[in-house]
Image (tube, rainbow, N blue to C red; front, side, top):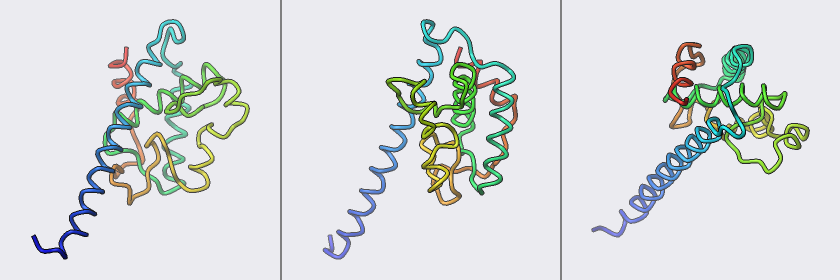
Length: 158
């Protein structure tokens, strides 16, 4: 192999590892959320229709207002919106569902991770992959999702 190809190959290897790690992280988050939503001791039900519709409307409006897009995989979007709605019901605020908190109520009062969180508002960085910039490799081309898609994904969580 020609030595001048080594930097290019190194860059490609690093990029593929970053993508693989990102996908792995997202799968872990979704698995955690699924278990967290379905933990009978903590959550006996899914979100209310009222909160689900509120978070659905908010997500679409916010994506359009900020020029961001939902994940190319609609189930990611649906699970995150359900998580926001569930936290709105349980905690009174749409606390980011993609993080682990020692004390969720304290986090709600701190407001840093209430959606849209500070990193999203300041830098357009959404840990949940709900609001993605167009240059993000996981971004889809949609700023809307049907309520039926969300409810279908929610039924699969039960």
